[in-house]
Image (cartoon, rainbow, N blue to C red; front, side, top):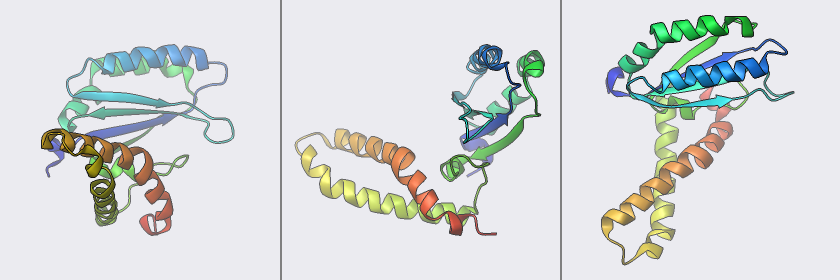
Length: 182
């Protein structure tokens, strides 16, 4: 798959000056509001600092392709808002770009690193294989009588939700030594 055809995620982490958190929150609301107006924007998530765990803000922008992300990242709007917030931060932003399923393979509270693609593909396949067999064994019998398209819709929504929020975070932690071997 060409890079232009993949979803792209940008993860930006930055330390905010002590006492500037409220102003940073206002600034963050403004800049993320502007990002939403750009074509291909799929969403923004903010992970706020947690004392003793993580001291920086992490902002995650998702776009439907590299070109649309590039439009946002090089825009005069983004440059303007970065200049407006410059006095609120004490560090240069750390920016990482991920595409495809790489974003599943990150460990909470640690800098985002991406393992080799063959490892992510292998673990993703194994997780999908196990999950699809469990869902068809236990969930499909409960859905008998529904149209096949509705059954497929329910199975795929359930699978994606489980993969994203339950399975892949645990699989990533369980296989972290293998995924991130030096």
